[in-house]
Amino acid sequence: MRTKFLRALALAAGLALANHLAAADDFREIEVPPPPSYRLEGLISIDLPSYTALKFGVDPATLSVGRDGVVRYVVVAYIPSGSVNAMYEGLRCATGEVKTYARSSALGHWTMVTEPAWLAFDLSPATRHALALARQGVCDGWNLAAKNAPDLLWLLRNPKKSPGY
Image 1 (cartoon, rainbow, N blue to C red):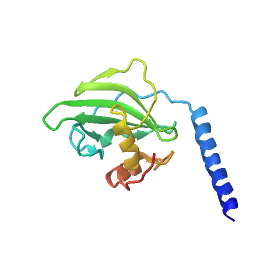
Image 2: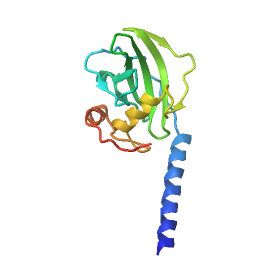
Image 3: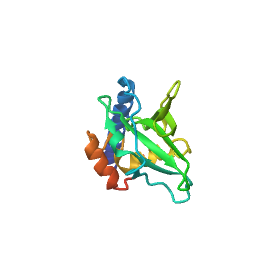
Image 4: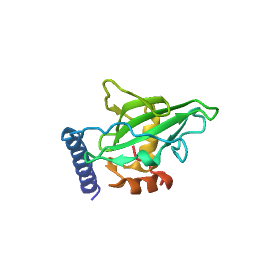
């Protein structure tokens, strides 16, 4: 009985991995909209460890879900004493990746990234906030947690604390 269970479990894990890899191979990114304007008021905080000096928040008015399944948003990184930077990013749950399209160090002034690339989000400083955002409510494992922006925003404001990635 135990052997049958282990075989079934291995088969299910293999199928999930195959579906995940197929999603990565079939991906075609849409033409990315230009960076939206953003506000510093009303940011949805991204839950990061308390020892993290930078605080991060997403401007809810900038969050969108593309036809390609990429969640795009403006994330604001700030030090409570005043320094503020923003990034226009895309997040792919299907592959656990994030891409930065543009950066801003002055409200309303964007600098486009010359060759934006997908990076695996992990615990490195450059992608830690994206991993936290995925876990906070954007992703449900390798899938989008919701298919539209209003539902994703609700999940971000009411995180479930899933282990996710």
